[in-house]
Image: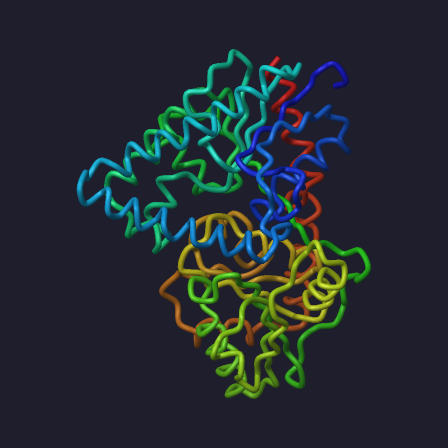
Length: 389
């Protein structure tokens, strides 16, 4: 496909492996490896890691002041947040439009944020890949549930306008696909589920064929938000496993929490994937853990279980958001109702025989390679892009 040039547009810097958890970066790199001529048209905001201490303090103060200003303005004018959101989205699309006009591309690939498409003036075919819609964000994440009705209405208006400009919508999960069709009037022909890939895969550390025994069973949780992803619940699971006679422990990657002092928790801290040593530690943790836990209260997709699968580790997850797309119940792991108890998790995990566990592990590794990888995503997305012209 050497004659088709694809402009990748994104609200954050796609060349930064930390933007949007590395999704645009991985997408761009793998598409190029697949032979797609990708032109990076993303908006180049300065990543926080490259700011000085004073700049970080100024940015934080500016954010706090802006949020307080919006709250005050909204009290005086209830529709202010609506107007502010639309104006903000328009500014992103104008900046994106300038990049498009100065390039020579045939197709646009938008990643992770629909604001850049709002009122975009282009005749080019547009493909939009994301893991969630604004409707799902507003309904499932606590901080967004508390936003004003005007704010939520603005996000819906922005996304409806953005998706109306798309030739194809590539959601990472079935739940997001249904939202695109039911909430934003897309046709089934426009919507194609293409699972996102894993950011942590075996390189320096390879999968470990070790299986759990009563003498040692290690579970793992990766959680930037330990409340939403329920660190407390995961500790209940390992403690109940202990009462069932298993020498259980939890490997936890994430911010410090009062519960990290628990004797059964091996807290590894926050790991930055752009740091080679942290990346190896992350790989080692997945390789030595027997199960990955993600009993989330809300989850857009679920990159972490994808990563565990690459190390042939099954996952036990809740049936929220994209998790039932990532994990196939009793094939590559276990999918529990979000109301399930920690006791139910522990008893079902402990009931697996050695052969059943190995079957889950092998199926998880197979699915990781076939569907939950960035090369697989790039191959399927390339086909969609080719069909645009």
